[in-house]
Image 1: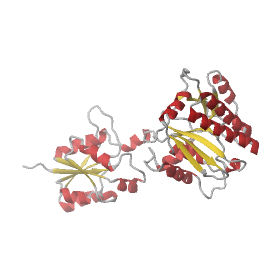
Image 2 (image 1 turned 90 degrees about the vertical axis):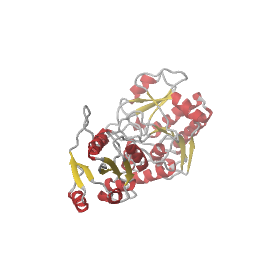
Image 3 (image 1 turned 135 degrees about the horizontal axis):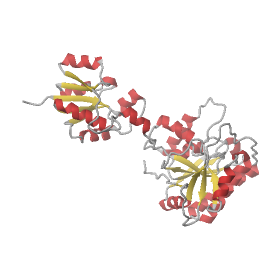
Image 4 (image 1 turned 135 degrees about the vertical axis):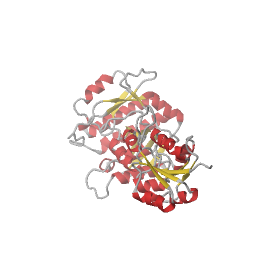
Length: 388
């Protein structure tokens, strides 16, 4: 006698042991066929991108030994499996207790298909798993941004006094950096609303434009986040962008040379201090003049040239000069407690600067050749162009 055909349907994104236990239990009723929600269906139903593409999910589900075969459901909505059922013609339709519905039950009754509801049960010795609970604990793989030089030039009220470059590097999230720490976490949090776990494989400058526009309401008459945040997150490697009185840069240039990126990683570390304190205003008491802006932009240009030449001494000088130029325009960056951290590491580093707008957060240190890392120093891993 031929075994019965059994059908189950679901997203199976972030495949976990709970799914496998469900497949194992359902396969006891016969040969198991799995209908998988398409990328388009999941995005429409759950208003988010999938973690794994439909091709990857199909591959993984088919590899499970309890599964006879699997297909991508061609339909849409909660009943996207209708065409799959009509083609496979199962004898049994199995659902989890939290995935059943009267609509599915009636659908099966109309076609003479046995409808079975299983309680969610982990296999022996394993914890109960669900995609919802796992999502709460999964960290995003979105990059962070480090500003190397020219910080503040992306604000038009600065660049109107003289155009110049900002230098950023996009770094891998090797640790969960503190909020309000100069790592562009506010822009990164905005990015999570579009791409919860990772950047799509798409034109990087276009992604940066999309993120910049998404974060900044065109009706907003208050603060506009600088474009360097979105560019630094979305554009891999080392990037410089030229600002001249406008919110979006006039030119963007990127460096993906492996020798240069590795050289930067060898000499750059981060040290956490404290988050920028509530109520702190780093723009209070600002004094922006053409001469001070020129100091900032000239330092950024020298920093780029030094990096391209892998000239550590010249890079350290430019790095320090860029930070000094920032503080000269925005003295409130140097909030209480910052100088103590600088003094602590001044003997170990060739140069230092606070990341972002300052007021706290992280110190970036330029280390000499062969310098020993201390426990609190965080190595920088620059995101390569093909790393997503």
